[in-house]
Amino acid sequence: MSKLWGGRFTKSTNELVESFTASIDFDQQFAMEDIEGSIAHVTMLAECEIITNDEASKIINGLRTIEEKINAGLIEYSVEHEDIHMNIEKMLIDEIGPVGGKLHTGRSRNDQVATDIHLYVNKKTKEIIKLVTTVQTAFVKQAEANIDVIMPGYTHLQRAQPVLFSHHMLAYFWMLERDKQRLVDSLKRVNWSPLGTGALAGTTFPINRERTAALLGFENVYPNSLDAVSDRDFILEFLAIASIIMTHISRLSEELVTWSSQEFDFIELDDSFCTGSSIMPQKKNPDVPELLRGKTGRVHGNLFGLLTVLKGLPLAYNKDMQEDKEGLLDTVKTLDGSLRLLAPMIETMKVKKEKMYKAVDQDYSNATDIADYLVTKGLPFRLAHEIIGKIVLYAIQQKKYLLGLSLDEYRSFSELFAEDIFEVLQPKHVVEARNSTGGTAEKQVREQLEQAKALVE
Image (cartoon, rainbow, N blue to C red):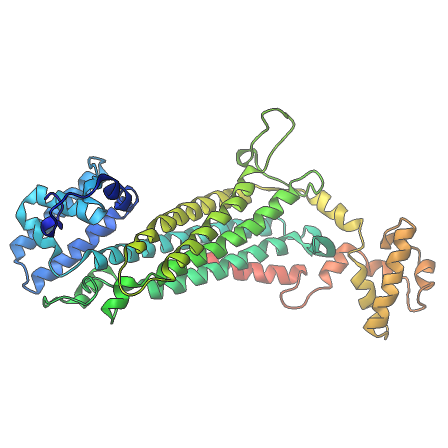
């Protein structure tokens, strides 16, 4: 039999079964992790005198040769050998002879694949953390460059109160900061070694799991072999965090699409991040943020897909768990690409300050400040709210904005109004009045900007 596990079988695997159950088309992406785990395992086997130092040296040298061939693009993987583990082991035996068959002593594919994925998720999590920091830096740069630009703030997509554009940019900074903290925290659960727990029950060989964990940079070993080979929580956690990050990216993308429309015209995305129309030459389409918004769905889908795979599985390993990889790989690719695009797109975005200010100057978003004004004159807020509601209705009926009303018109609603009401209603004053911690006043924004800079530097 050509299969490395074929001794018990009397028939060859059906070709359809072989192609259906093989994972080499996608798990070849774990080749470097598989070799890294194998070298640590063999090193430990020799130290524990389970194999000789000479055998270990031959196996490690053979694995290094295979690693070089993979990096040089000289390897052809075979569906016949199903997965990356069997492919590499077969290459090793071909490279160094029967001694290569000792590589698998004291372990199973079950703990081997779990080890590979732990190493992969650990590496990719650290890469994503760096990319998130790069995007945060882009938000910091935009906020600093437009520190005093005033724009409408919205609730229910209705103009609510004026805010600084820099304040708005930094809101996304803090979303990503929480995402980054989640990623960092998840490493505590990623850095557990399943290597050496065997198929499900451990091994009869006197191995040293703590040694392989140390060699691979893991902080802990799984204390339960059943849990070690069947745990995919760390993948779920990565997919969940990725889903939250993509949700934040999608919310931002929605605003970029909206702001770049002619109806808003608050920003202009750089030409290098937009496309044109095949028949309408005037079009400049925000395809990148639209696609970022769309790709959020596939990342969410990968999370729910794995949750569904795992929800009915008994302990320990089941072939269903082969479905943990493609969604993970797709999410890593999607998230990595999204973050790499997002940073330069934000950094090169043109902010149309005059358009934003005009939108604030010609609306009723300063109405709350009139209520606050009356409260400072001694009127209860609820009564002030009612009066301002009537003033806004009157202004709309007169086709005027609040700054366009005369003092006499204001005094017709309350004798408490004085000439200083017009200073209170200026957009700049409205923004600067919100000087509470975390508010949109420039002083507060500059303080949070310094906090943000410290976190990315």
